[in-house]
Length: 481
Image (cartoon, rainbow, N blue to C red; front, side):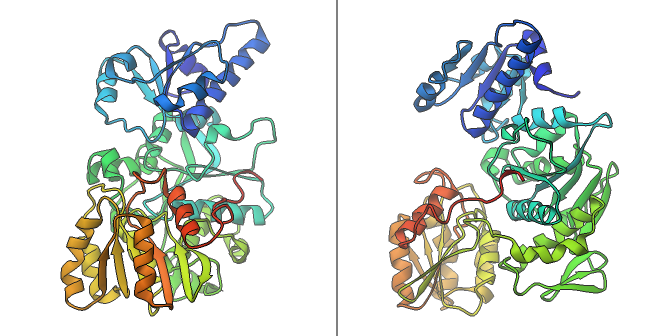
């Protein structure tokens, strides 16, 4: 069944709540009030009564809107949630929380703002035409931004939105619609697309590794939720990474599948970008650090072909792509030491990919953060052949990581130190490098606790290293251009 703003309003008498007052929650409120305005244009009508469940610290900011039909509560327990027919839930709130499960059992319907947007933009066929959705454990933001960059370089008006930093419901509606939509989706949002009843035109999955286990409940559930974008949402064309073993085994009878990272399609032959047997472009000078980022270019070009466009003609425009902040971002050099901000790294696999970019250099690596129960054994095993000069652990899971690495460190592979906080970890790393090398922040863990998010962590790293955090934090090209 399709969802729309108006159907959400009408459902079950219109008892609607918004759960979470982050950017998605605020966008949902604005969108619903926009629908009220559309009704008012056809005749006088009272605004839809809405309840917002938010944190106590956010209550005053909600009330400051001056919305007469808006009430605010801070206790979203099962009893209160079950009083509503529709709850528009922020992506970061897990549907597996006990109060959500209990409310759903008595009939409350939980949807996300992403589901509302997709249902409203579906054609009669059910497909959101020219919408390219990108997900994956790592690489999804760079892939989405690079897709938008290449499409725009080809003269196509393109929207860049989603998990990358602009909720879909924030996209302006008073301007001409874009020719293409480049949409990043987190594992928290892929199910929203499936639940909307709409189908993406093209869906890209870059890779799958254990992540967000506290939100999803288990690795198996995380994989299942992530893949809902291609299993349940049934895109017209699914673009999959042939080098990922989980994706390589996937069967999608409801979609055409196109592979990248395969010798018959777009892939890398050493540093050369290949389309089948044809060498297209030398990637060594591209602003895409690491082989994994150049693999993202293969995903983008495959998606562009899926849209029916000439990918070969657009490939050279990758040379003018501006890399995203907090992703293997070189901040500069201070006193002989280069500082690299890879704060987006929240899995050990991402940290290994970051280390590979600096093979042969003196590196002091900073790892650790919020403990999500991820196993670091494979990372420790990789240190037999990929160890940096030093590893400094920090944060909640720092002691556990240090314990996992201790045997390798004692064998003489690298220096190992522990720190309580980022400041102490950076001082230790600088001391180990003795005036030459790279301090690499690639934590392999989320930032929760001392930081709001990975952006806050990256900005703090930049500030401690003596660089302007405002200069390094903006994402270019969000919205429609």
